[in-house]
Amino acid sequence: MYYPQIMENNQKIVCSNIWKVFGPNEKKVLQDLDTSLSRTEVQEKTGHVVAVKDVSFSVQKGETFVVMGLSGSGKSTLVRCLSRLIEPTSGEVKIDNENVISMNNKDLTDLRRNRMSMVFQHFGLFPHRRVIENIGYGLEIRGVGSKERLDRSMDSLKLVGLDGWDQHYPRELSGGMQQRVGLARALAVDPEILIFDEPFSALDPLIRREMQDELLSIQKMVQKTMVFITHDFLEAIKMGDHIAIMKDGEISQVGTPEEIVANPIDQYVKDFTEDVPKYKVLSAGKCARTECSEESRNLFSKGDQCIKSDVKIDTLINQIADTDKKYPVVDAVSGELIGEIDRSIVLKSMTSS
Image 1 (spheres, rainbow, N blue to C red):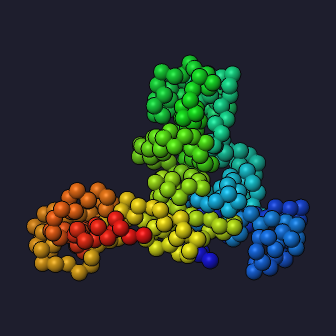
Image 2: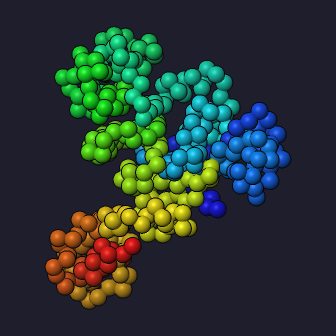
Image 3: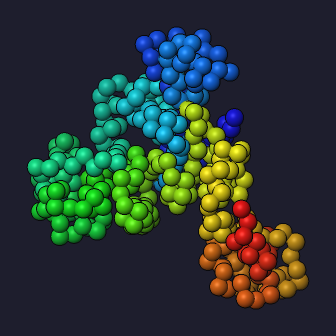
């Protein structure tokens, strides 16, 4: 089983050895648990369900961290443990190095009300309230005055592209528009952390893609720490800076979309990557040939036509596909020469499975 190394730089959320067992004697069952048993065997033997099994990971400030898995994998239970909407049976959750598990009710309420917001699959809008009143609801609960509440709600409304819809009721909006209202409501309170629980899964495919693009665009502006739950691998690699893939309550692999697509840790993860267009995920740095020709070295020495390592292969197709030229690939941060790329490498990335 894969145990991700918890990074220490710029951490926002750190989860360590999280377990969640459902049943009347969860702590006793965990204490006596034979970890070699499967979920089904534990349930048959004890009458308890192991929903999350010894999970550790970290989320960096300002990134989008995707928890991906099929139904019953434990992803929603795990994410609800972050704010103790579900109490972990064992383990530790830290936000900004504060131990969430040991928080009293007052501090926990403050965390949920002022530092976190959630966006759900089902929009949860109040049908009797206008759009602007729905957006301002979290601020109203905080006791924010009416003028400030209106100003901040209008700003959030504009941010999600619904300017002019403030006086409408939810029933007058499409599903995609209602989800935008839910997103605006979450953004209005200016949380440090946004949690998305399969927010787009109920939408039509076209609207879903639009909402994904909208959220990516908003994230570039607001740079919030986001935890995003999905069962869709293509959505995961589109939305996530890092992805944790779950199976049977455990994390199978954590990595960037590129790391997971290029190097799936086992057959379970590999099955998800089979239909992914690799060239849309892989970067020039990942695909580059490390031995450089004289041609690419000369271009590098002139600072000419260098390709940064983080550039995706799909953006290079038009530039490279019809030429025999070899291009230098440089580290995106240091600018050092790390390899070269040419047509054969681009074509290979387009045909590899």
